[in-house]
Image (cartoon, rainbow, N blue to C red; front, side):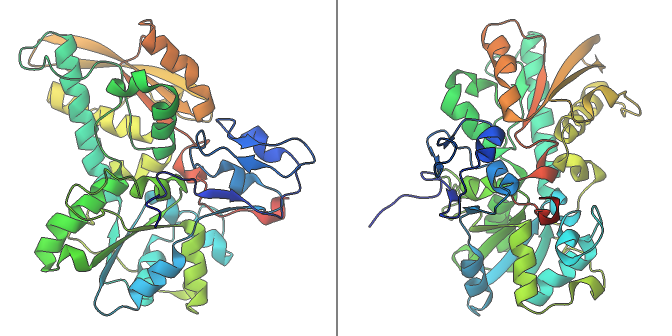
Length: 389
């Protein structure tokens, strides 16, 4: 029996419906889509980062992703399993499109209600784990800054600049093409995987549930999250942290199959045990959001004051590479440190940034990379606007 997992193979497939129009090759950030114009295309899984941009941009719907919908349905029908679900911030402002609601409608409350109607025992918000990521990445940045400043006790910390680590497509790209850059990546897991680890340990213990009988499901805007959850290292507790990932599109399909009147559902709140969060986590799904939230955390810890206002207009928007400088007073050292930050949206634009770091000529301290244009909000698992074709 094969022991291959989604971490070893690809999750994106080009079907026989391929018209060989060549559009997918133009949007693939790594050149993983192969084939000549007029010939059915294929995917080189050694270089594919599972981002699904080819899928959502295929004008013929000829590209699909591996689905765990049936496994999730089976788990929900198994009375011996406690099935919990987490949903990412970008899902709530896209799910409504699948039910004819205006683009950008926040359907968080209806989504929570629908998930409970589907039979999930606990409905949580991934924003809780996004806050953990903010704290972890922000603290790690501080430690790396202390190392740079020569503070005793921080000699073994990682080098600057620090790259964010929450986008699994970007992480795979770094591992595949630039292994020398890995010490610069934050050691923090993504919010999805932090949540999964907590679910199978802390939450299971608090609920009196055997982790072996818990099924952890994620609803994500991202196809690469399916690859991430199946990575072999994501089992530190002895159990797979996240068992199944379904996309925004797949959740809509499950809701429709169950005959739920989504549009008219009353709003409900997420469960609180690991569902409470701050507003900082909400901006995670948009390019620049992770950097801004983590930087604000670092600022408050280092200065002892709140970062009330900072001009982030330079790093917001859709330009592929953007930068800004934030002056941070380091109270304990009695110095002010100009922190240079860089935002990259689109993996295909990151090469020069990485090469500058490896060559020792980078001016940055903190670099955020998100594979999908604009961030997770435009992930490969989001609704596809067919009427645009």
